[in-house]
Amino acid sequence: MMEALKEECVIEKLQEKGYEQGIYVYGMTEPSVSVAAVALFGVFAGNQPKPFILNFSEKGIAFLELNSMCSAYTGLHNFVAANSIETILFSKGFLINTLTIQTTDGIKQKIKISNVTAGASWQKDNVKKMIGFIQTYKK
Image 1: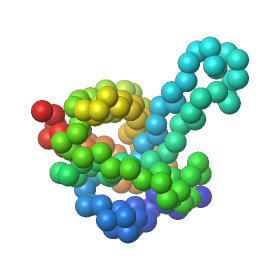
Image 2: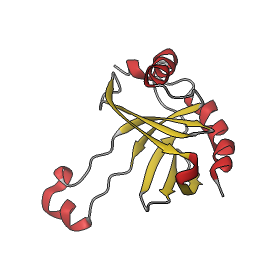
Image 3: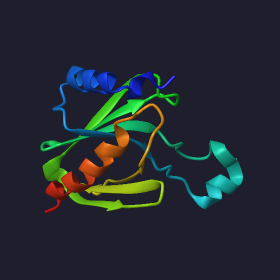
């Protein structure tokens, strides 16, 4: 369990996908669902949170999707180019932080990033580095 969060696995996967290694953190997408859907369908409503490794580099942000147990990568990945980031906001919480990214084409995504993550001893230091680094994306 959580094999994919080992630092060497993260670096290997970034290289395999051809992404420049930068500051990487573990995060989960915030579910996007309406209150009415939750009332009707409960936990089966809408999108469930998905775990990702987010890699921040000068070129942009790479998203590598993990399976729900964080034991392997699903193979799905995406890249948001730095020049397509319209706004990026980081809201600090006690245990969970929120990163909001909006692109120039109107796509908005909220990602929950914990300060500490089991199986990822690098998380705490990388969250601190990321907070300073994301300022380079602001226009």
